[in-house]
Image (cartoon, rainbow, N blue to C red; front, side):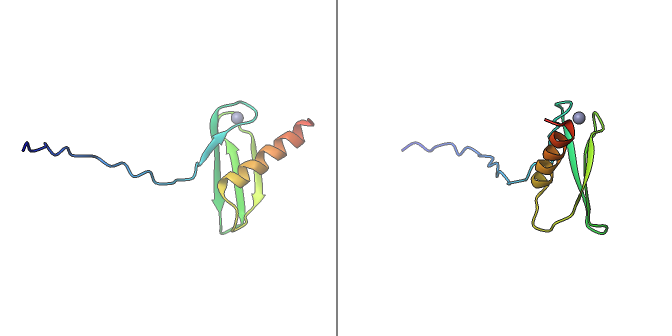
Length: 81
Ligand SMILES: [Zn+2]
């Protein structure tokens, strides 16, 4: 009986991390960051490439992606589409 070489397997445990950078609706680069300021209750969403930015009220049950969705809505609304 041949012994099998035990291969050391590196297990990559995919930790489910929520995306923190999103694509900008204006310039298209993935550099929209969501920063949540719990103390002031303001969520700042801004693109570091073109400077497109918006502030939203902080809600405990919302995820960064939700603010990003609002960011898109606000942009589309402002663009008058
Ligand atoms: Zn941008």
